[in-house]
Length: 495
Ligand code: HEC
Ligand code: HEC
Ligand code: HEC
Ligand code: HEC
Ligand code: HEC
Ligand code: HEC
Image (cartoon, rainbow, N blue to C red; front, side, top):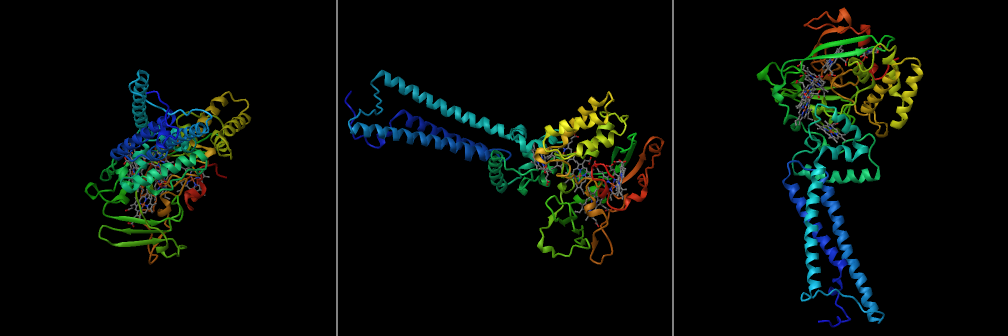
């Protein structure tokens, strides 16, 4: 059976070469991996945003590479046939002759090799799928754009909760949207054209209230919690100033008490809706409450004259107060207070509070520049203090955990709505600036004792005067209390 193959080889037979055959194996492996990934994803608990990249980008790439090889083999073979027809040389067409031992061995090796390859591909794609489920993939692989959120997350109460548990909404619609946005994120990361700071464009990646409620039972919000804020003034002695309070976090469920605490917003029977004029929901000019009896009350600010049908109306949920449960960026003022309260920055270093805050807030464009300039600044401020190196080390840790100059991410980019001191937070609605139709009354809960009772404050002997009915807040000079706190307290040093 050693006769020459017919010169006018058929088109199909031109595919009989090692290159085309290997390409075909690759094509089969890619199809196999695709089906497997598709099936795994279909039965997975959470939709995985990066699954789209694997199934619809990476696997097809292998598929096309395989098809390419098949075609390349075909073209090379065609050239050979042409040359042969022109009599330049004899074409080589792969002939497998099963009666020949060598051919049998080669074929067996090829078949086993191909199956092995397909198996490994399947295994590999499954493993890759698992990798994309992990937090380190979401946070660390995509290092530059996700670094601020990932770092902050690792220091949060939710460091053990998977990114996908909060960020991938339920339902088939979200499933598809998540896939599409996963592909877009990859594309933007590769091109480096992502937003700085990063934003959630896809509203479905915003955690839904149901997500939080899967762990935090709304009916359970009862009673008060005790909170202590240890602050330090920006004076020479870094004078301590502590505020101790009970925060009225109850109110969600009439069965467990009166519906009037902070979580009364979450009462199943009343509903609070609002309009926000900006994506960070900082400006809220209109609010509507529907109470348990179905009575509707609208509140609006005096200068908001728009027809409300022109704006999307949002029902208030956990994220309108807890917008930083996993990614909190401390202001320089708060971060330095925290470090001092914990003794990591010695309050005995003169002017430390003011100087460190000043060093942190300068406009640096890279982390390296910040590290260098912060160190130089503090060295110049404390040339003879032996504690300066320890101080610098601590300040750089604060900077590293709360400032991301390359991503323009810090407390200004991501304001925290939970309180009212450094951002308007609760005072977006509770500052007494929203009125109902007849301008008669404003939203309930806008006096200083509605949300908390200040039980003690100040320093030294002053701080020991506990009053469980609540002190009036004494604020260095009480006259300060008029404009909203955040108009002066901007997280930095105040003039
Ligand atoms: C406890 C729930 C929760 C977990 C867990 C969580 N996030 Fe978030 N994330 C949020 C909330 C809430 C927002 C803000 C939503 C808003 O502004 O409406 C957010 C916002 C973001 C943003 C947009 C930028 C910003 O800060 O507003 C990114 C990016 C992000 N998260 C990434 C991650 C990554 C990566 C992980 C895992 C390492 C993760 N998240 C884990 C709740 C969570
Ligand atoms: C998988 C479960 C889980 C989910 C989902 C979850 N949490 Fe939590 N959360 C916890 C646990 C556990 C703690 C307590 C951690 C601790 O005490 O160290 C906690 C603590 C908190 C706290 C108090 C601690 C603090 O200062 O941050 C708040 C507020 C909170 N969660 C809000 C939320 C919100 C808002 C969401 C939805 C975006 C959410 N949680 C989703 C498990 C969860
Ligand atoms: C009106 C704003 C607001 C809304 C809406 C809100 N919370 Fe809170 N929540 C607070 C405040 C303020 C605290 C106290 C914060 C502190 O300790 O500094 C708090 C505390 C908590 C705590 C920890 C304190 C405790 O022991 O009870 C959890 C957990 C929590 N909230 C979960 C939720 C969840 C889940 C939702 C949505 C179903 C929600 N909250 C809606 C304002 C709100
Ligand atoms: C989007 C606007 C809005 C925001 C933001 C908001 N609230 Fe409210 N809050 C309301 C409305 C509306 C009511 C119901 C008032 C009424 O029934 O007249 C309410 C009621 C309350 C009550 C009950 C008062 C009472 O005596 O019944 C408390 C306490 C409260 N809010 C605390 C907070 C805290 C704390 C924050 C910030 C973490 C906050 N609110 C943020 C709109 C808001
Ligand atoms: C709508 C609810 C609400 C009202 C009204 C309110 N507060 Fe607060 N306040 C809060 C919450 C919530 C926090 C805790 C913030 C946090 O957990 O970081 C807070 C924190 C504080 C702190 C500690 C701030 C810090 O970070 O050092 C002071 C002081 C304070 N409030 C004073 C006042 C005074 C004075 C008034 C009246 C002008 C007032 N509050 C009205 C909800 C309210
Ligand atoms: C007119 C400007 C102004 C207003 C408004 C204002 N403060 Fe202050 N506050 C100051 C100044 C100035 C200091 C002293 C800062 C320092 O020495 O570090 C201060 C100090 C404080 C401190 C102790 C030091 C610190 O940095 O935390 C607290 C707590 C505080 N204010 C809370 C509030 C609260 C809560 C409100 C709103 C109810 C408020 N302030 C409104 C100007 C203001």
